[in-house]
Every structure is written in C-alpha cells, then in structure tokens.
Image 1 (cartoon, rainbow, N blue to C red):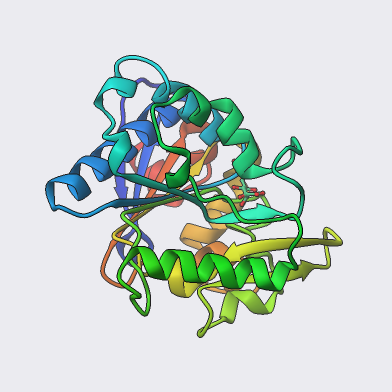
Image 2 (image 1 turned 90 degrees about the horizontal axis):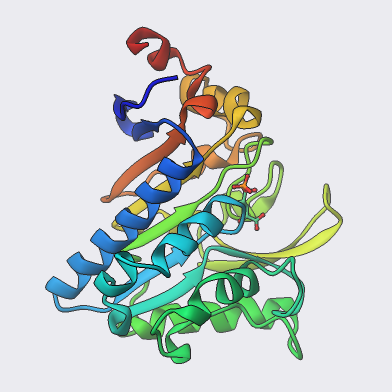
Length: 261
Ligand code: 6PG
C-alpha cells in the first residue's frame, strides 16, 4: 500500500487516477465537484451535476457538507441530479436521491428547487423519465442534448453503470436522454440517463473502490470492448474528459498499474 496518487493513461478509455483508499477517493470526488462548480460559475452558467447511487458518494457527501468544502461550494449555482434511480419513494432507504438528500444535501445551503430527484410517486416510470428529460433540456435553453458539467458514476462488479445493466437495450438507446426500463436480472424497474446524455458531459468521473471491483475494472479497461456485457464501456464523452478515480484495491489487477507498481 502506498500513499502516492498516480495517473495511468488509458487513452480513449480515460485517465485512471489511483488513490490509496476509500477516504482519498471520496476526497478527490468532492474536490472534483467543487472544481466543476467553480468552473461553471466562472463561465457564467449554472453547474449541472449528476450524482450516482452507491456507497462512495455517501462519504463524498459528508465531506461536501462540512468545512472547508461547505463554505467553498457555490451552492446557489448548482443544479443537482442523479444519473439513475430505483423505482421506490424518495423516503425509501433504497432511493439514491433520498439517501443523498438525507445524508448531506439537507445540511447544505442549497435551495430545494435546485435538487432534481426523479419523480417516483403518482406517476408512471415512462412519464417520470420523460419529465426528467424535459427538466434537463429546459435548464439549458431547450438544448437537444444538454451538457452536464460533471457526472459521477459508479461501476457495479457486473460491469453496469448508472442503471445501464448488461444485456439491456438502454445501453444502445440513441434517441432518448432518459429511460425507464425493467431490469430482468434484478426483477425491478430502474430509471437511467442514457449514454447519449452521459456522453455529452464536460466531465464524467467513475468512482470505483474495493477489491470486489478489481476483476471487472481490469476487464473494462484492459479487455476487448463489449458494451452488452460491460455497459461501463459505453461511457466515453464525445468532447469531454473521462476520469476513473479508483483506490489501490480496485486498481490491483490493472495491466498498466502493474507496470507502474
Ligand atoms: C445504483 C447506482 C449504481 C452504482 C454501482 C456502484 O443505483 O445502483 O447508481 O450504478 O453506482 O452499483 O455502487 P457502489 O459504489 O456502491 O459499489
């Protein structure tokens, strides 16, 4: 185990920043969010940020809601979204948005109108996805494909990202920006941004921690491309930056890591 942070160049598969552990990973993600928010503010536009579900954003949120970051984030200029959501009420512990709102956004000086969870009550999944698509378009003057300043994503040990699961048609969606679908392997309904919206972002960062992700991360970054089995490989921002922030444990099987190690 080392304390250094190093960057591995994975060409068009992105830059891989290897940090020592989960705390360092959360810290880097929180600072990336700060930088994106500052850059958008300096450029005179609202900062569109999409958070992911999963465990890492939880730690990141704790950092955002305390000094020094809470004082530095331009909260008034943020528009917060989630790249995917489970089909449960906001109050459910499984809700990605609910968890982040209760975990840190409630403690932050952000106007609730700038927090945009997917609607999951009193609406059908299809209408909820369509409403989210309108909301993101409206925030950028009815843009065809709005550009998020920063999209944070997780990667499952099965290669999924957001709620783009292996074998689902959503991975190949080229029209819609947001879809709802039934995920057979989980027998559940999910809402998710599609690659079309994800790949339009200025910056996309995957947050991947833990030994359990090591094998899949090596397949995704070193192996042949097969987006049907590894939807995470469908993420490559057309004119933006792709960064993988990974801890040592998750990076342990990467070919390029070995060469640097
Ligand atoms: C979800 C997530 C999902 C998640 C990954 C990684 O709602 O399930 O958005 O895509 O980010 O499964 O989760 P962990 O970071 O907890 O491993």
